Image 1 (cartoon, one colour):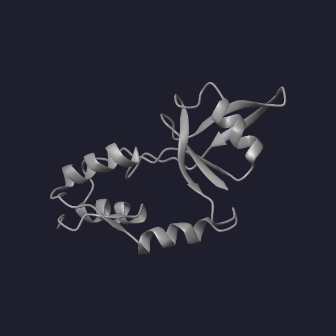
Image 2 (cartoon, one colour):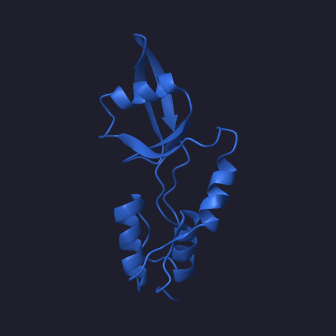
Length: 137
């Protein structure tokens, strides 16, 4: 089973977890602040590492599980992303850029800049598997 963890407050986070009384460094990478905020993440299918992360004192404070995929292997993350784009969940009642940004912040834990174009906001939402049918440019 593949689990993806995200850092809650950092674009890049380097921390340690304990495995069998030994310290192991783990890195949450890939974060960016522009054009929208994406938190650093770590993807692993190692059950020992997953247990160490989930029992660490920083779990829930500095990092959390973002999603779990029990169908695919770690070699196929691109296909997971493309499937999410094809099967977008429709979110009704979002009529403006501000409403979309606030929904994304609240539900996806991503900080988007308020000066993004409508097209970029919709493109980001679609990349995460969501569509706002009432939100028009």
